[in-house]
Amino acid sequence: MDPHLLRTFISVARCGSFSDAAHELGFTPAAVSEHIASLEADLRTPLLTRRPVMLTSAGARLLEHAGPLLLRLDAARADVERLSGAGAARLVVGASPLAMTPRIAAALDRVRQAHPAARASLRILGRREIPAAVASGTLDLGLVDGPATPADALPLPEVGPLTAVTVAEAPLVVALPTGHPLARRLGLRLADLADAEWLDAPDAAMPLEQLRAVSRTDGFRTSLTYEGTDVRGLLALTAAGHG
Image (cartoon, rainbow, N blue to C red; front, side, top):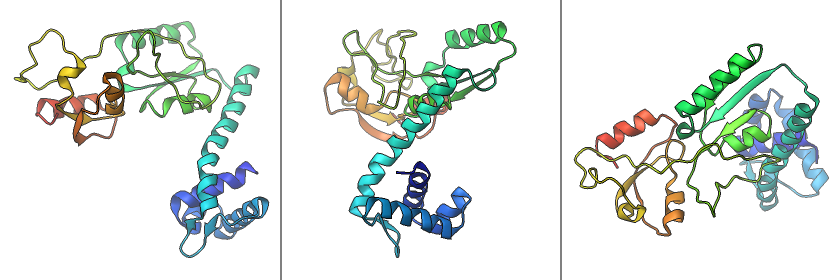
């Protein structure tokens, strides 16, 4: 299957429109239609209905494969380019909000001083985006955080050839509103908090499904969903008593 055709197919499936996909990709609607027709001819089955534009059962199954396939192609290209030393000297680092610590900031400063000719940049991203971005070459290095134990290392998705190294370990910390009954304790167990209402902020704090998995409970009810990577905004919501 031609990866160019797969990219067009993903765009049409996401947009739900041939014309919108054409605008997104910089093609004409006729070219997009031709791409889809070629892919359907290759697979010998309809992938999309036309009016309205909807996935067939075969199209839905292909969509499950298309994203990972294209990601592995991007990862292969990035891996070969790294090996050959192609491109200008650069360091693009992605970090989840809680992984961006003073220690990491100091390490980046040492790297910049040791390699002043390299172009360095830092992106704060949701932890779910980072492994795929490293595999595809968008990032040179990714820093992610999450709950782990000596017997259960931090899991990473299977997105390509990645090397994982433990950089630091620290205890989990919970943010509580001032005056909360548990706020004056020197330490807490997750079980103490399973019945509380929580801010669900998967990109800025610990995903609640991971807390449920670590504590082996179905607790940790969501009081408010927070989308974004701004930890300061999350703490303001906590201080106001939202969770």
